[in-house]
Length: 145
Image 1 (cartoon, rainbow, N blue to C red):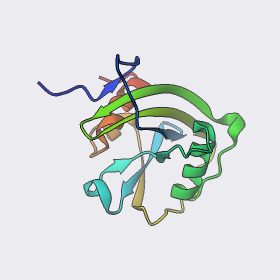
Image 2: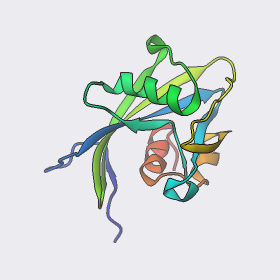
Image 3: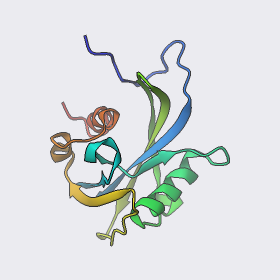
Image 4: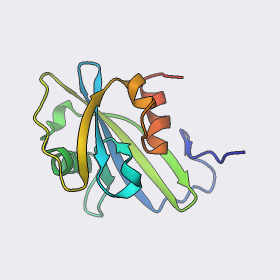
């Protein structure tokens, strides 16, 4: 039986090594995904990153979104969605999900960490090679099966 990677309630004895963030940047009914240039075999991911010691999740997601996609986030329009408890065999962490809705399609300026970007519907994203815990989070966020 496959080990459960993600929980929506804090599991007993959950001891995260770090806290991370991810953001659903929405334009109409499409989400921005970035393709890893080197790591994770070219998988697709949301703009995301690790929360540094001097940051909170909101500050981190604003920084990461700018670093990875060149987008400035208005903190007053940033919506916190939930915290997921992620338990990979070699990595245990909190994953804080955010959403940001755009009125206009922005110009994306990728960092060296990513090789391309795409706007896709939640249903299309489920068919892509995305990071495993993001797959489960996508289903929860958009009520998909």
